[in-house]
Amino acid sequence: MNKKISILGLLLLGVLSSFAQSKQWTLKECINYALEHNIQLQQNLLQKESSSEDVKQSKSQLLPSLSFSTSQSASYRPFANEGGTTVTNGYVDTKINKTTYNGSYGVNANWTVWNGGKNTNTIKQNEIAEQQADLNVQKTANSIQEQITQLYVQILYSTEGVKVCEEVAAISKKNYERGQAMYEVGEISKAELAQLEAQAATDDYNLINTKGQVSRYKLQLKQLLELTGPEEFDIVTPASSDEEALATIPSAADTYANALLVRPEVKNAQLGIESSDLQLKIARAGYMPTIGVNGSIGTSTMSSSNNGFGKQMKGNLNGGVGVNVSVPIFDQRQTKTSIRRAKIQQEEQQLELQNVQKELWSTVEGFWLDANTNQARFRSAQVSVKSAEESFHLVSEQFKEGLKNIQELSTGETTLLNAEQSRLESKYTTIYSIQMLKFYNGEEITL
Image (cartoon, rainbow, N blue to C red):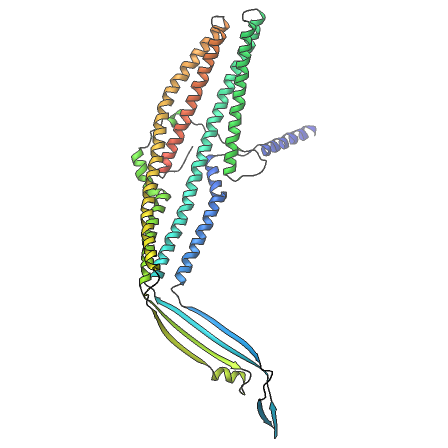
């Protein structure tokens, strides 16, 4: 019985410990979660919905409008001396109504038949605005993916940096312990022992600082995912091999050519030019006449009439139709100013497209240069790390035997640490830059 209770207790403890562990997020999970919960992205989606409503509203302007109107009024004549006379069963009854009520009822319809193409061009312009709103959603989504990838790679880089600092700190601690033993037998001075202690303290500080960097990057990634609460946040550490940093780097020219076809900011700028062309047509419509059709039907009633309500409604019923034509002659330069502004907007949109293309090339070229430069640095750093490791181990053995001094040992350790950091930095910068080049080529980010 006790054995069964112990087994159940161990199982319960295992379940509780599994729940206590923080969820580890993959890069794909981070991206998918952010695309669903990011506040800025949700705001852009709402703007897209608003643009869709603008399209529906502009299309409804092609239809006629219909409205019902009524007015009710009362009047009072305090000094009235005449009234209505009625004869009932041979009796004459004269009644003076000082208060009278009037009512009118009407149904009105208006339809703009033609206004120089302003309505149809407005529809096209709003449809372009809807497409641009959708492209803004895509642009924000791309920006979020780039930020998440950058932070994710920074966490991976800093996490490996922690391991390096832990190894160096462990070596420094052993050297200090070794130095204590050497000091006790008189092989080194107290000043040299203090140098070993200071080196161990410095390496501990570097370890704590690197761990702090990892925590800060995780916090930034957590905030980008709109995660709140005290729950721990951690990521999955993929087995990023050196081959990823040594992979073939996509061509800058090919990447830029593909980016021009798939990047939403380029499409948005191109649509901006189309929208400005439509705005010019809308402005020129100010010189065109406007043709409209209208119709109405109405009736009225009054309390002072001898006829009943229904009879009055029928007897006073009237209707009519009409055509109105408005020809602009002088509009205080409004149309001319609108045309000039539309042409200025056209030029601005052309410049905006050029600026977007220039910035896109600068971004792609920057990733390409970073990838090539850091890939070369990584190859060199691999050799430097191997050489620094061999040199440091040799110096450590010689220090143990009293053939090397504290300064030489410290120099060897610093050289090894710098080589390791250079290797990690160049490795992950290359991986990130290659991933970004693939992303700008239209491929999915994968780590």
